Image 1 (spheres, rainbow, N blue to C red):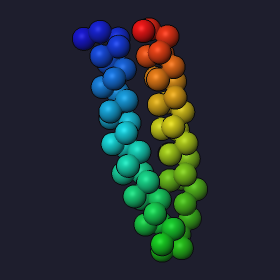
Image 2 (image 1 turned 180 degrees about the vertical axis):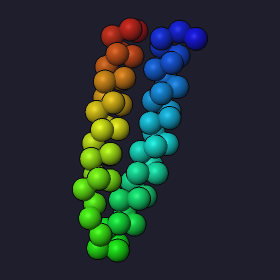
Image 3 (image 1 turned 90 degrees about the horizontal axis):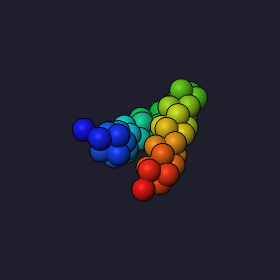
Image 4 (image 1 turned 45 degrees about the horizontal axis):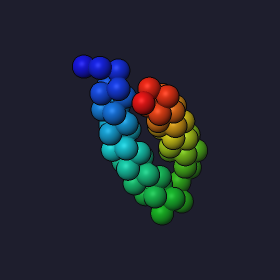
Amino acid sequence: MSHLQEAEQRIEELKQEYIRAQDQLEKLESLGMDTGSAERKLMHIESELEQLRKEETESS
């Protein structure tokens, strides 16, 4: 598998992970619970997605 294909696969995995983390965040908010860890997870996913997309663009 090429580096570009690996990056595309990881982007798809992160998109799914982001959706799950966003759902978790919404549940925590609705229950009035601490959302700090869920927010950090979303920020981490966003950062990784940004980096992968940057690498993907540079490779093209």
